[in-house]
Length: 110
Image 1: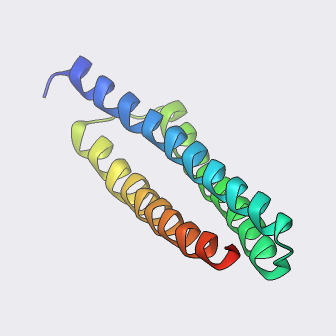
Image 2: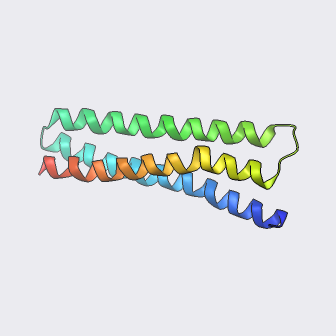
């Protein structure tokens, strides 16, 4: 693959990490709001912990990607692919699981 195409793919993948974080935090904020209104304190605590976990995991991924970006070594396509496979795909799996769990918590508040 050519160098500009690899950069575009990596930047798009990095943007998807930020967008995924915002979407999951927004969904859990909605769950938190409805659980406070219906006085389900256990669901409120679970949704607050999920928000904190989401922010912590995305912060860790951003920290790893920043460390990779400022490293003074020659990077190849294989290194970029390894970075995406080791950090990005598990992150998206965790965000999908949290997204599905938010639906279950939202059903408990109604």
